Amino acid sequence: MKPGDHVDDFELPDQTGTPRRLSTLLADGPVVLFFYPGAMTYGCTKESCHFRDLGAEFATVGAQRVGISADPVDKQAEFADKHGFDYPLLSDPERVVARKFGVARRFGPIAVKRTTFVIDTDQTLLADIHSEVNMNQHADKALEVLRSRQT
Image (cartoon, rainbow, N blue to C red; front, side):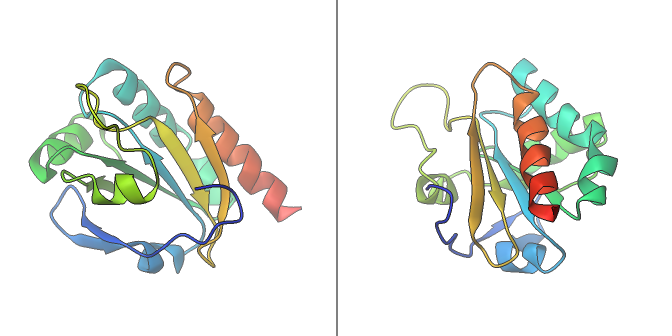
């Protein structure tokens, strides 16, 4: 996927098992959908906590943060509870949505590529952010995109 592309709707369960649909989330503003390789790992914890810590900034630009990984619902719940995440973590164990976004890995121990997508309310992709090593870059760059969208 590349900026300007239409993002197809999808539905996955969050950490409570509640089904979440992208189109429903977008009704409240743009969505920052960040794929992370694995709950409870060092890098993913750092990245997810940075998204949590910037909650007020994302609220200011009217955007929602949504994490997604191949972890099952119960592991997502443990991850969210341990770190007090105030946003949904979606469970994509079959990597169906990861494949649609082109971030599913074909082999190896890491299921998905660490990638963030900024999606506008009309389901247009505004930006895709890639970095396997700079965990803070994802949230920081997503905020830059959303702030520039407001001007």
